[in-house]
Image (cartoon, rainbow, N blue to C red):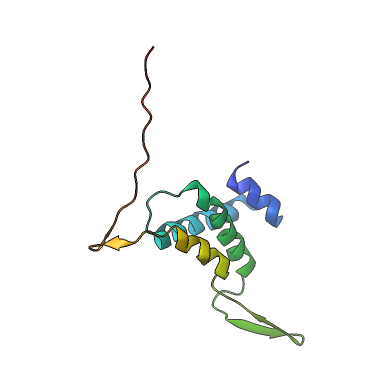
Length: 111
């Protein structure tokens, strides 16, 4: 199942273009925040979580809180648990540069 299909199931949203855009933006954020060039598979759920958070926040962008009908709501940029995961996979810089391990290429051995 693709990330788009998973997001559709989790949210009930059927707009493929909107969900694709939210996924793309979330992936760009994760790559930028972690200072990586490729998204590790372990962070795919975090990307989906950020996309869901962005979908839920639509219409409340820029607000830190709101009161309606005697109820108060406060908004975070993203839940703390998302940043806890991202911080575990964030690359540190050495001399102003970040170094990312390259994936090993498997060689085909001819019999």
